[in-house]
Image (cartoon, rainbow over all chains, first blue to last red; front, top):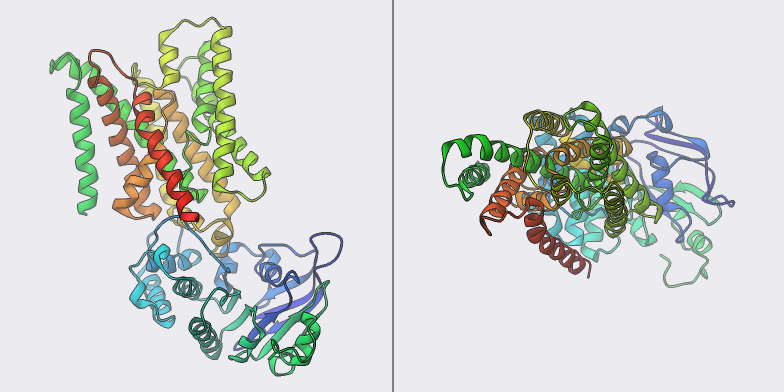
Length: 246
Length: 309
């Protein structure tokens, strides 16, 4: 069964559709990049997949269940979402921030169980930030912070991981580190979908690609066929010999 | 553990100060009949306002939020004054229901106005709260003037003071505050998730609209019980969570109990200070809190402006 199945998804903010009849599916182990120009609906698509925004028509199914009919607590067990930026004015420690990923798996009132603590510690090790566990989330660098919120998503133990521009504002070292981490996660059976700003990053482990054009056009397929100079030139409206293209 | 004992020590010191402070010295019947009820009232009002502040700051992800700034207190005060003028008994359920309705209505109005401005920003919420508070305070003054009210007790109620704690009102308010604190503590996990914002909380498995509505009800009820007992006292709800967060960290699981203890200690000390500073004249606790709290609020504004730059 696919981890994520999208069929006929249509959404618009105004009269013109932003996403029009979009269909694709991801299986466990898939690592998909979502590429396209600004304003083509990449971030909106992720929010439609989690049910934070509602599509005009079409369906999104997670492991066979319709997202529109799901409670957030059920959804958070099936899909984890990492926003491009999450801010809080309060100084939660990194470990407490990661433990928040257990919200949907623990009863509302009781404390965290030993299993919750283990899941958090595992996520901290997997993202390589175990050494930051006691630091305040607000004292981290942008890259460390991004890793902390990826660790929070991993602590949810969902089978699908959605990330909105996980590498923006990061230096090359962190870009490579995060792409490597996502590829490893896909390698152990998660389905991963990441909105990326730089098509070149897709070569660091993506096996699927979704190219979104403005006004609803799209292409979905193997990354090796879609993340090419010719296809990207069309999507971004660049000359096919532009040095910006991979 | 040491940090909790620090908080309990501060609370004990505030209680002793409050029981001993005043021009009449240490006469046992004064302590027993006057200062003890007053200290209990200060403890209950402080705990209620501290709890409400911690709830608002968490659920709105806004460190500037508190029942005074959001207009919750002004709504409760307006409803209470209307009840007094209409002759409603202060210990009756109707009075408490009306005061709760005023508190919740004003809070919701501020929130709704801030949302109208687009994305809910910290500053928009404060501005909306200021507008709602100013309007309600003007309504109170209008009502008092129109009714040719000459009662000093009503005047001091609006200023915020802990003078005549009737045992019935004290018991009812303390009970409401304890129940609200317990219900909020039972949902500490949702409150922590809301500290990442509505969208962040949703993706962690929380229903943000429901939690917002619930915590608005809990915080408005705690505030209305505090106002029913002590009138309009500001800044306890704003300052307390910021102070106790330094001891307990931001998680609501420890923050909520600490905010109740800290708010109780803060207001009890402020009330005792108001009785001591210019003795035999008394400064209402609300005035003492504003003298301390307004500079604190300016410091918060300055800090948040610097944080963005």
